[in-house]
Image (cartoon, rainbow, N blue to C red; front, top):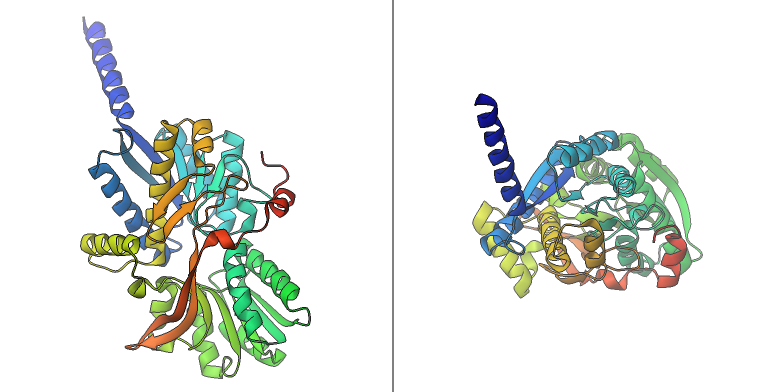
Length: 398
């Protein structure tokens, strides 16, 4: 009797679990929450807002979305272990996330090996959709190529010949610098690169970097540092007068995550990519920003938009596919259109890169706080290589 009762309970429990599983889509999200909190805390809030809005209106095809997150500690091996655990233990339907480019590449490779759908939300290296691109991986944010291509016309307009470069010495920084040098040289053949400082991620020796750049006597500087490294570089550069009389082009610096901590120390007139949330007046952005501020009593950051767009993309893909089947999701994401706070975006079939854009403008000060001025939105669709070039860059990916 006891054995029969136990078996009955087990069967009921299994049936209940199966019924619950059929009522939800589970998203497994992996990111560097502890290593990069400035960006990823707002990112998590953006995901939370999107989930709440989607589930409030009935979810996707009657199924609610459930999010299960794991921290990768900024380490590729930990990210892969987290992916394994999410699939084996949590039985997630799809994988998404990652911030640092080398971590994103590890998850891209994992997705290919395990034949699992993966949406790379934030990592920017071009390799994710080109050299290491595969049929299972899609990427949301505009890549290093795209964002650098948005900045190069501004760099050319400065008419500066001698350029110095500073960047974090890992995949993202290396990718951004290689693209900048190539595109600037193509547009301005007489350009010279007179100094290059590669700093360990999160461990920049700002004094020695600034001194090395000063010694090279450049006319302009291309900066790829971000977060705490950027703050140290700016403060040391301000103290030593590095930026005076020089043009500066800087990737990501206009994002509130990195601009806000500088406060009154923000150097004026840098050409940057970023997110001027306080001065974007479109219906899509107004709706997002109002909902975000109501829910969190705070203003959105760039990470907020990325997290929100990532969940909205997964939801749109699941809706179009009609299931979480990997091959159906791949087919759905190729050419998928998603409405975002920046307007509609499309996931390109040829390389799985979305057309999400970025804002380009100059740094300024308002009320003792850094802002972006004279900015304009750059549609990511206009800053992509030709299809023929993509085929050369992505030869092995079907």
